[in-house]
Image (cartoon, rainbow, N blue to C red; front, side, top):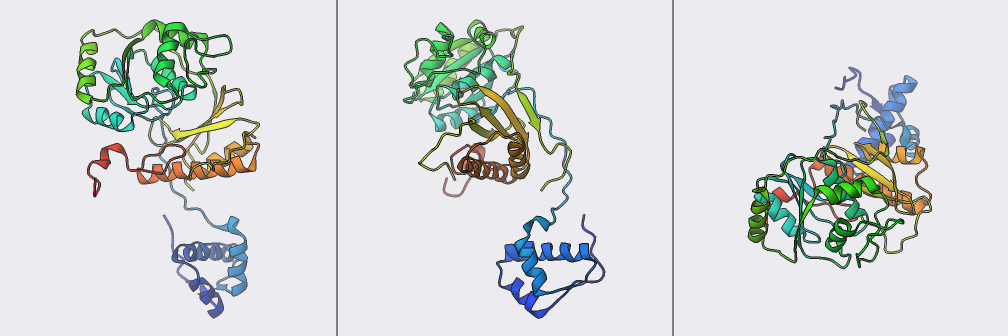
Length: 350
C-alpha cells in the first residue's frame, strides 16, 4: 500500500516538458525514478537535470512491494512439460506424441482414470520428462501412445526403452530416432518404467473416440499403485522465496559450452522452472522462481551461462514465461504465447 506525501513534488517547466515527451508507460516509470531520487536527497523540486539523471540511472527505480503468497509445488508431476493434469491418482497417462490438437481434445474430455495428457516432440529430453513423471507417481501404471509420430520417433523410443532398456552411454536400444539418448535416467528409473508400466501402442490414431474407448478398457483392469517411485535428485534453488514481487531463438545457434536450458511453467502453475543440462545432456541444476528478474540473477550467480547470446535468449524466454504466469497465457519455450487450451474454444473467432 502506498502512502501519499501531503506535499506534492514541484516540477520545473523544462523538467515537466521532458516528461511529457515520453510515452505514457515510460513517463510514469521516469516520474517514479525522479521522485525516489529527490526523496533520498530530501528535496521537493525536480529539475531537468534530475530527469536526465533518473533516465541514465534506471537502478534507482522503486519496485512495488507486492506481498507474495507462499507457493507450494505439488509433489507430482515431478517435472514441467506440455501436459494437462487431470486426476493425480489416475492410473493412466496419455502421450499424443506430436499431435497438439489431440492433446487438447482428450484433456477437455477429462476421461475417468487419466492422470495426465501431454505431447512431446523430442526423443531425448522429451522422453526423459515423460518417463520421469511416470515413475514419480506410484498411481501411474499405463501409458497410452497415440497421435502422429514425428521424425524424432518419440513413440518408438518410449516403446524401445520399455522393451530393451539403454546402453551404457544412455542410448536407447532399438530406437531409430536421431538422438535417442536418456542420460538423466539412472538404471533405477528405467527399471521402474519397465516393471510397472503397461504401454498401449495406438500410434497413428487421431480419433479421440477410439482412444477414449481403449482408455476405458485399460481402466477396467484397476491396477493397484506401485510400491516404489523415483524422482531426480537434482540441486535446486528456490529464488525469491517469501520475498516481494518485482521471441524464440535465432536461426543461427552457437552452443553454450556450459550447457542448455529447458524453461517451462512449474507443476503448480505459479512458478517458472529452468532446468540446466550439460553439453552431454545430463540434468544437473534446476532453478525455480516467480519473476524473470530473480531467475536471471540466480542463473548469473550460479555461473550457468557462458555465452552472451545465450544469456540474452534466456532473458527473453524467462520474461515470456513471467508474462504467461501473470496473464494466464500458455507458455512453451521458443513459441509465441497463446491462450490456454480451455479458453481457445470460447475465444473470439475460435
